[in-house]
Length: 411
Image (cartoon, rainbow, N blue to C red; front, side, top):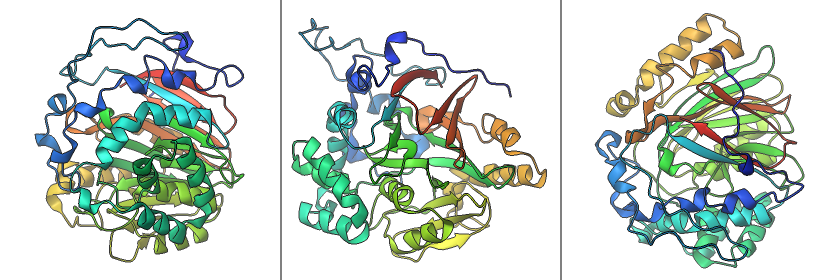
């Protein structure tokens, strides 16, 4: 498939870091206009939900809101025009935000202010007795990921020392969530990791985040404000995740903070393996890691059990050759997608040709209304410091050294 460069649909949304590198995060067309609070979070069991039965349009229908307000000095007038939430999501325009900030500062604070109501409503949903105390959550972060504690403290300060935000940002015992995905690793001609991320567009943070919290540049797809769904670092390591197919949850960290920790602290497969073997996670995931040597592994991690490692370079949304939970695997066509990836491997295709396949069925999905639509495809070349995000007919080349920006894509 031939792709063209993704053009910015509104030139005012492409912002140089030399002017105002975070204004796009608080613009009227940004994340703050999404009416996340209308979702009935408490009614959704993310770990075992039948995705095909959810009426996403009803869950995310906006509340009644006031007419458009006049702008006040220094603020953009909010855009109260209600979108057609019952329209098909395929063909929907989505704005993605590029954050470039070595240490948490104005850009991160703008993201927090735009999304805090949604994240904290989700955090307080379900069985709130399962949420930890602040003391417990901070103790777990310090015990398992002490290198992240200085950054965590900066983030909490930027929230105004918000108590629930401080608990949320540890990502210890968050509510469960389970995206579907496909991913594959290649050694030649250069270490490469390719993945699709399949989920609901209404639950996507829509950020691509470059940071240097500990001095080493890390670039990846943001989630939970400072976690990552996938990414690469300056040491030549790339990581991505898929849901592991096992329902249920337990005591542990949400996977985005684990991906962040891997990229902040690990440079080699050996270091990544040690981390995944010791950090408790709250749900089952497949985590694929490749380093600058071209060697790779996939770790199956789940609450209450040791990590299991495989050198097979392709993975989708189940564990083992025969899925543990066939109904889950069938719902996400996990076996079909893995067989397709294995077929591509047997043809000895180059990474670029394989990347094209990620924009076609069975790897590409348009089931946005059931929480199983492809939100983006990305190919990481970590030794080159390049990530290429693709959508059908569009792409966005990202490096560690880009400026902050935003860009509109079409699903």
